[in-house]
Structures are given as C-alpha cells and as structure tokens.
Image (cartoon, rainbow, N blue to C red; front, side):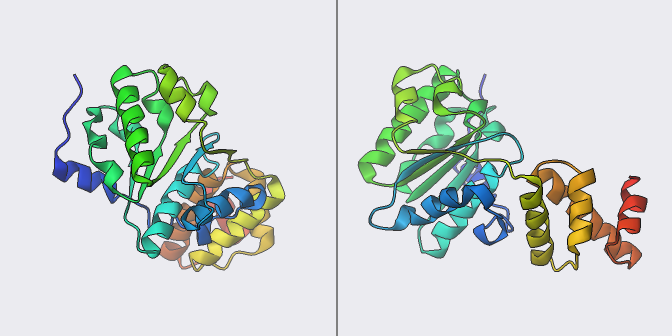
Length: 236
C-alpha cells in the first residue's frame, strides 16, 4: 500500500535542489539548444512544457534543478520532485502543485505503468495547462517509449518540446571537467582533466563524483591534483 504524504513532507521534498545544479555549472556542448529552451520558458514565445530524456549521468536531473534555480532567480516559485524517490508514496504528493509557476518532475519512468500515478499525472498536466503554468518532465526514454500505459497521458507527453539530452564526446567531457573544477575552485590542468576522462567514468555525473572525491582527498593531504596523486588516490 502506498504511503500517504503530509503537507510538511511535500514541502520538504520540494526544496531538495542541489545548490551546484545550475546552468553555469553545466557544460552544454551538443545540448546548447536544450539549455536555451529551458531559459526561454519565461519569455513571451517560450514553450511552457518541455520533456527531456537521456541515459543515466547525461545531466537531465541537473538541468531540471537548474531550471528551478533559474525560475526562482526570476521570482517564480518552483518545485522539483524526483519521482523515483516518491514512487513509494501515494500520488497525492502531486496535489496542489499546479498552483506553482513551475513544476519539474524527474525520473518519470519510476512511476510509468502505475495506473494511480498515471491518472494523477494526467490530471496535473491538465491543471497546469489550464493555469498556464510551466511543466518540465525528465525520463530515461522518449515519451513513446517510457512505458506509460494511459493513452491520454502518453499523448500529452509529446505536446511540447521533446529533447534528447546527448552524452558528451571525450573532448567535451574534458571541457566539462575543467568547468566543474573551476567552479569548485580547483586548479586542474587540461592534461589532468584528459587523464580523468580517459581513465574514469564516461558520463558527466560519474566524472564529477570522482572530481569531488579527489577534491576532498587533496584537501586532506594538502597536495595538488596531479596525475601521480590521482593514481595514488584512486589506485589507477
């Protein structure tokens, strides 16, 4: 039986944005149009509904949270809900969200195929449209392949702009590592960044996790981030 969600729990879940999940920390590479469309949501000709999809680690969650930060910076209240964390609860967690200017729902695949959640999402979609609010959805597959069974909801998922968030090629991954290191105040050379990309995970989130671990290790050891230090720390 699904757990019910109190109003207090709903508020707690709605403020779980990562502070570093901002557009300034996202190396867009082949995804520049996605970032532009997210930022243009608030212009006269902006698209109020966007659907993002991509494999794990490409940055869909980062982009949804960045869009929420961006909206808040413009004075628009927003809510970010990771559906994979909420799947154990009743879909009543969605109640009243249409009153907010921006609703961002992450990991749609976690509740796809569940009739109670699909019904609730369908009605939320309609209420958001009627209020002329904004909606962002992210998943690991395109709208037609995400596993939604309710035909009316499935059709609505393709109403707005649909973007595949593309994984970065190796050279772009190097630039993404350099950008993230700079934002963290780390002095990382291009040679070191390329070594990390060559030997480390091949997705941005995995590389950023490695970079965070190295940042902490270098602080503790009071050593610079060099290739020998990385080999020693990560046993590469």
